[in-house]
Length: 246
Image 1 (tube, rainbow, N blue to C red):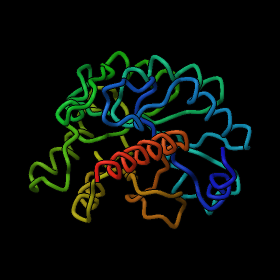
Image 2: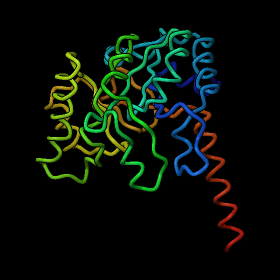
Image 3: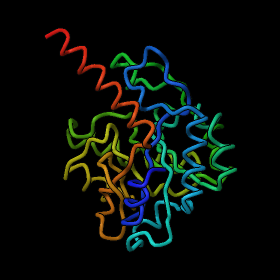
Image 4: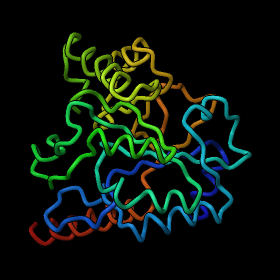
């Protein structure tokens, strides 16, 4: 964990945004959404060694700064490789996590990524979610079908937000209190619908840390440093190619 991240983590609670625990496939268009198990384990170890402890999302709303050095581990999409590769590391380092799942696609594949030409990934099914919950972790909603909520009419927007909550609660017999905007896409209408549905928080992909001063339906998150480094390298290579062409 770098010095800049440690300083940032003192101003508020960092929510770390992960997607997939696996080496990025050569053909993937979004390699920064992957983290290898070795790097994931090293990142958790760095958090722990820096004095950070695991916190559930509910604690963020009461935090005034972050004097107790809390951190939240989040995963988007419900990929099976998180269940298969991540549980041991999370347990060993003493972290609990929340997985934002897409109930209409549980046990299937990430069709929203495939539609844009990205790599297919298997998603957790009911049994996988139950195993995740039994290990002490949480789930939240990532909408019903992972559509861009800003592009939907009112009826479809409500279905994505309200029906996903009900589906998860009915299937697993738990309260689903937390939402995560698909693609990080939201506006005031989307935010207000999430609040109306009865969620306690919603997570964005806006960069930063959060505490009691942060609007609860606009929680900020941080892509882990190694993923950002990878994205920076890709952008640098693309820029070099563009300069050569021009």
